[in-house]
Image (cartoon, rainbow, N blue to C red; front, side, top):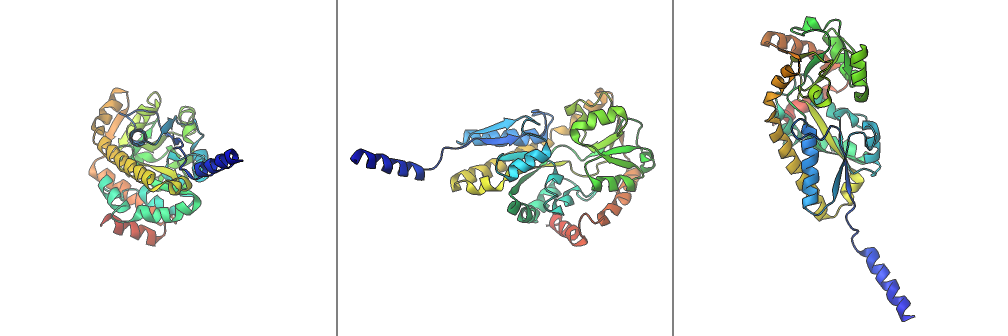
Length: 323
């Protein structure tokens, strides 16, 4: 009887003891390339910091835990702790984040960071996403400002966009193409190579490194450095997991996030040679002159009134970036 009581008491004590660290699963969204992928620089720095500070973390290759939508669902349910994701994945919860995609709105990453942090926009985004189980842990740069890739012709002016059918992320990007005189079609990233090779789409908007990283230079032959908007992805975290951490572990995660942000921003400064790499791969590069860029900027302003964001939300982003 005494032995039974002792076993019962020990079991009760163990049930109150902190659980051993569960593995932190990190779903990648790009090849594991520390030179070519800013997203991977963020994820790898984050994982390394956790592992070095007593929290086990493991990277899972792009697609291993599902596509972007499936990773989002798993993060919201607490089945995956961390997902590297596109901005629009949380747009289904709240559209405020789409302010980061306004064309010709942000001058550089410093304005983006100022808006998110000092201007309070990251906290405001999370006000709407965390009740749904998803925390936007970070906004990551994945390269210099996005430009125009296509398979057909050089784009030197706005008029050259006519006749092109561009791959779109969503309806808001289709609206942007319309203001430029082009057409758009929504294509998942996994289907982009086939779409470009079969003519379903003629091109896409992305930072300069993308066709190099994903092996598209066999069919992408033209790039226009239009500097449309900062090239951004996000890191999403399970809110249930984040709130369930001990104070010590949550501080480790926050510190890992800060380290990953710093590494990601430092990586951006290494990307000046990407244009030369495109040229070496056989891609013809057009550098827009000021007059042509102004044409694109003026045309793009029509999308600010598309209804995706309210005028008040756009004004909030303006105020935030001026902080």
